[in-house]
Amino acid sequence: MEEAGKTDGLGIKPLLRVLGRQHEAVPPVWMMRQAGRYLPEYRAVREKAGGFLDLCFNPTLATEVTLQPVRRFGFDAAILFSDILVIPLALGRKLWFVEGEGPRLEPLADAEALLSVRQEADQKLLAPIYETVRRVKSELGSTTTLIGFCGAPWTVATYMVAGQGTPDQAPAKNLAGQAPEAFQYIIDCLVDASVDYLARQLEAGADAVQIFDTWAGSLPPQDFERWCVQPTKRLIAKLRARRPGAKVIGFPRGAGKNIPRYVDETGVDAVSLESGIDRGFAREQIQSRVPVQGNVDPLLLRAGGGALDREVDDVLNAFSSGPFIFNLGHGILPDTPIAHVERMLKRVRGR
Ligand code: CP3
Image (cartoon, rainbow, N blue to C red; front, side):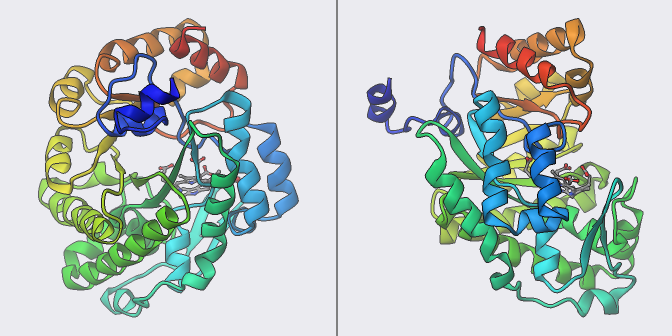
């Protein structure tokens, strides 16, 4: 098996083979947010760490929680345990997490506030995260892919401007409309900080990286081009200038019909698909361009039973005849029973 994998030049990690456009009879599997609160072993470490950020910046504990889901389920990928909002923190913004609610930052109210954000990320602050990547890498089996990540500039900016998650990203959209040049400045800072962040993750041993653009779908076409496509394109071009051949998965969540354009312009190696997307469209217009990942509805994973079985079968029927990575359309929900994850994996792997 290993020899066959090596001789075609694509290596022995199934997920990396798919990113190299190889079709795998049984698709590699992992889950967004696979290290998280649905796991009792995660909750135990989380309690020991104190706050969520204490966990992100503690290489011993972050390594442990990164590996937990891989050990328990035999996933084909480990995703670095961290958060997209450590970049604003490294750019000098205050960041804290409110228990049961989510992230909070000091909001950026106007153009002047945007322009006051520092340009250079504090790499010393981020050093423990690269140390986690090194440690995870040294403990992973030879067939498991290590995925690093960052948030896309637009999505990170939505949190920086509003100071928290918002249902419609109105604060960022308004400020981008009122002060496009100042907004461009913050986007450019995020592009450069993210390039550096991802390049260092790859240097520390990440095999591939994913760019999470959770709020890409809230942008109308013109703004999608300016605030999602162009920054992502520059981010990837600059990353590949530093790390030639860097493998990048894009996740422009909610972008639907705009995804083919996103693929063509940004140069992503693969796209992660949200749950709502039309599967015929995705197969014909997206998977014909690049390998795809995702799409299983996290609500149906939580529901389990026959509804989950049908969802797994529908997703496999839609995508498994081409290069495909089995995953969810968004993060696993914290109240998802572990037995449902096991049931899903059995069905995908046929045992
Ligand atoms: O297992 C993994 O997927 C790796 C780790 C990871 C986390 N966040 C850990 C986390 C990744 C890849 C992220 C990405 C992230 N973070 C995104 C993009 C993906 C998405 O979900 O849309 C966003 C928007 C964030 C910002 C963020 N972090 C929010 C909005 C929240 C609160 C919501 C929540 O689920 O609690 C977080 C906290 C967070 N990030 C947790 C985890 C495991 C929960 C923290 C806890 O233990 O209480």
